[in-house]
Length: 81
Image (cartoon, rainbow, N blue to C red; front, side, top):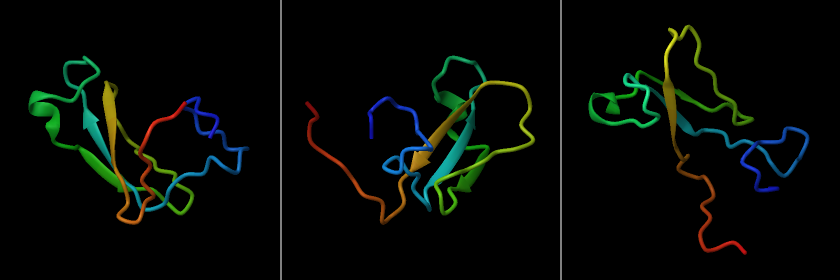
């Protein structure tokens, strides 16, 4: 909640979200974007009760992660000042 983009495990206000679908994409051309033939996820998992997820046995290379919110996940909107 300190808006630094990093989940601080010691801050009880910055908890993970359970039940989020996490997709892993292989970034074949290493450009940091998922495009072209890279649009199909090579692995999919779901976050656990604490919002953690893990992909193992990955070959060396560049990967991108995409998330789909849980159906009951809170949604924020508006502006921040």
